[in-house]
Length: 607
Figure 1 (cartoon, helix red, strand yellow):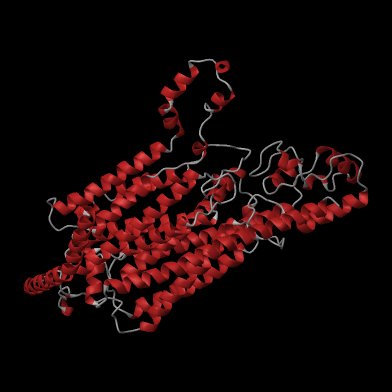
Figure 2 (cartoon, rainbow, N blue to C red; figure 1 turned 30 degrees about the vertical axis):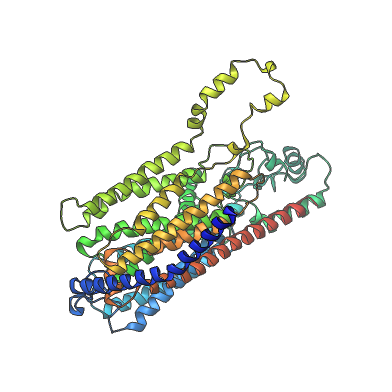
């Protein structure tokens, strides 16, 4: 009976508490409303953050190309043409060039034509409008990248002509060796020489002779030889094979493999190109490949400087604040592009696509993806440590300046720690105590089960390094609560801070999945959480760039709220990620197409 009574009292007490909750909440809401009203009145009197940000005098804002009323069609045409050229045409040409496609030159010339039209429209616009942004960086950088791409296309054209000239010349094998490689066995060449008395001998080289980009005596070179036995082919078969070589030699991996042509005309360019030495060609081709892999970043920087010039941002002393935000945001943007590329399968040959690195003939050391991420974070901190302070009008260090310096020090230390963790030498030294203890007993003292415990754990086969994700997570948390001078600036900082924090959490889930079940295949494992990581990094980096002081002032001047920019960015990032995936798939198609053409030639050459 007493137990029943206690239960009844407890039930009544619980009902009383629940019944009193609405009154408590209502009283709390009234107090909150009163406090909110008082705060709104006070903040309204003092121009605080609770209400709208005070809009500056329109006459105090400098004139910009964005608001310039004359020749609007010309500037819109310039922007549209450049976006089509640098965002759509150039990446397509780069993918074809990396795939060593025969359509590379056509795509590059199409881009140059589009870019020339855009430059011409820009020149006409500048000639008919006042110079609202004197000595801006966009004009200089635009011409620089235009000349760089033009030089790359010229190298491609000269290299293609040079390959044809060397193929049609009869100066002997030395010049031919500098241009192309056709694998032929020594025995077959001797038999062919005996039948045709040097008529065809000088055109091809022996299979144990090294060519451009190949190694001596490798199995891959011998596998495609003309014949493996002497006397097994008739002169008719050899004649047919010669015709196949002449018709399909452009399918073979020549020195500049992406630079072949279907015509063999004598020209001044070809005569000059034929005098280029093998060492010079190596240097030129290295530069060609370097431009292939960096021109998109240069184009991105050029488009960003165009936007800065269009809106007239970062003039005078504000350039340091602009550099700080746009360099940091740009790093996160390309960090996200790299992450999306890794998910798609890029750099799979290095083991970066969340896969097992395929075994290759040359197993040289290659940095892991986490090592590169640590290096990026270290670079982020090293290049931005004092930029925020340089942008302030006062030479003294404020508490906010010290906050920014502390963040950059975090990036320097975190990036350095991430690179040290990825060092196999460092990890081997950390295992010294355990390895020395295990070696103190002879191997025969262990049974089979105990001997298996001496093997490295399977988690050692894959890098699980949470430091880069931790650094970005801390940055996102700090920036989400970073005090700003205006409400819209606070909201923008909170937006990109939350996005970076979300990307870090997604990367953390990726590591949990891979630690529980490390990848066992050379094919990309494509963890779905990495798509979230890429989206958070790309969108967070873009909004990061919009959080600079001049950008915020421009948003206030043109009555653009934070959510407008947020929603537009989300839509554009979704489209951009879809375009990147399409580009990488297109590159795969181009590689397979060229590979199929090569395999077709090999099949026909064996008949």
